[in-house]
Structure formats: structure tokens, C-alpha cells
Amino acid sequence: MSDNATRDIFITGLKNAHAMETQALSIMKPQVKRIENYPDVAARLEQHIAETEGQITRIEEILSGLDEDHSKLKDMALSFTGTMAAMGHTVAGDEILKNSFANFAFENFEIAAYKSLITIAETGGYNAGANSLKLNLAEEKAMAEWLDQNLPAVTTRFLSLREAGDKAKV
Image 1 (cartoon, one colour):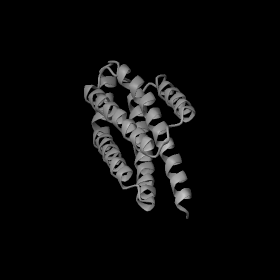
Image 2 (tube, rainbow, N blue to C red; image 1 turned 135 degrees about the vertical axis):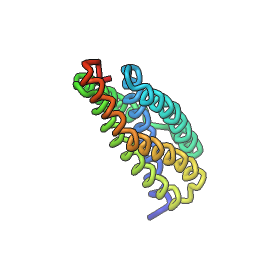
Image 3 (tube, rainbow, N blue to C red; image 1 turned 90 degrees about the horizontal axis):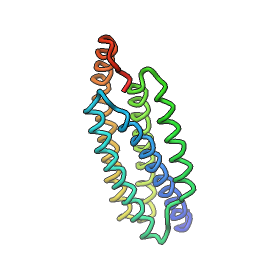
């Protein structure tokens, strides 16, 4: 594969990752605003929102170093779909569980995307970009692990609140 082809694939992947992280923010921000009975989930989402904003900055720095910019159209489209996904769970009687499932799935999607981007970066000799993407990957793995480890506690709390007749969905 030519250097230009690898570069083009890398840039497309970076633009997609930027839009993906924009989508992640549009999913997490409405969730964290609605959480009432799960302070540990809210705190971890707030932390990951800050991490995601940092990830977006890293991606923008890589793109800038390549004399490229993110795709505003992709960002807008995925932000919209993320907002719709977050809103879709608000009608569920078990919104916190649906959000937990969706967040876990999305984190694993991001992990896969970053693993692929890192491979492209290393193959193309974009080592500085690879190092920044590895930081993003580590944060996504940490979030996925937290969600995985905390799903039983969130589920148990949901059941306890529901059984007591309290508002359990958020």
C-alpha cells in the first residue's frame, strides 16, 4: 500500500474517531444530567466526559499535525444520533440499565476503533499519533472495565430501589 493510501486511511479514521467521540459526549451528557440515584455512575460519567474532551483534543492535534481538520458533517451527524440514542432510553422503565448496557457496548466499539487506528498509525510511521491514540485507548479500556465491574452493583441498586417503590430508573 502506498504512503498516500495509508495516510488517507489514517486521516479518515481520525475524522471518524473525532465524530465517534463527539457522539460519545452527546450520549453521556444527557445521561449524567438525568441520574438521581446512582451517584457513583454519575461521577464516573463526569470523569469520562472530561477524558473524552481530552481525547477529542488529542485527535485534533494529530489532525492538525497532518494539516487536516475534523469533519464537521460527521461530527454533527453522529452527535445527533447519539442524542437520539440517549433520548430513546429515557422512556424505558429501566433507563439506568439500558444506559449501562449501551455505554459498555459503545466503549468496546471505541476500543476496537482505537486499536485499528493505532495499527494504521504504526504502519504508516505516525508514531506521535500512535502514542496519543494509545492514551485514548487506555481511557476507553478503563471506562469499559469500570462499567463491566459495576454493572452488578447498578443492577442490584436498581432492584432494591424498585422493590422499595422508589424511583429506580435514573
